[in-house]
Amino acid sequence: MDNNQIKKIGGILFLISSCFLFAGCSEEKLELQEEVVVSTEDKNKEAVRVVLESEFTVPNEEYILSQKNIEKKMDEIQQSLPEGTGFGMPMDSPEWLAYEELVGKTYKPYFMDYTYEKLIPTNQAFQFHLSTELEDVRYEMKVSDIQVTKSGNINTPKFYDFTAQVEYTNNAGEVSQHEVKGTAILSEPGKIGKFEIRDVGGLGEQVRVDRKWNID
Image (tube, rainbow, N blue to C red):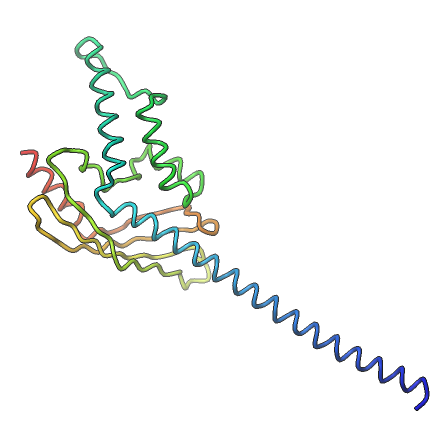
């Protein structure tokens, strides 16, 4: 076998090995891309689950304490002013800053900045905890069976529907079951751009009835 033949055979073997190498690299890239997609979806679902667990796990003792401290501060301010004088909670007071810190550590890791900034002004943070700072209203909630499903619509790939089962126990120990439904838009991996609870299965009304009954 002369040198030219050897060179030709060597060239063919090199091309074949290069093809296998390229194919192997392509498969690895595809696998990595699939892993990234799965990882992103897992982060998105986890963000929704964490927010639901926070909203529907009641009582939250740290939240109750923050509300009591704010109420106490408000009473002190009111007593120091002439009767009938309007006032508001100082945003730089330790009591309010402690509340903002609680909201921040609970929700900020899972929301886009522009969405997070709306939680406090619109009372979306701890919205199902609002009655629990009252001494005579000590209901409980437990959330379970959270299902988060990515939209199958190619036009809304960042939309997720969710459902959760909430067990509600009032002061008298009476238990009721409620199904919570809603939707979320995950603008970035693990970051909620919109979170909307569309149906709480009568839970809100149950809380209002029990609160009114205890206050009256």
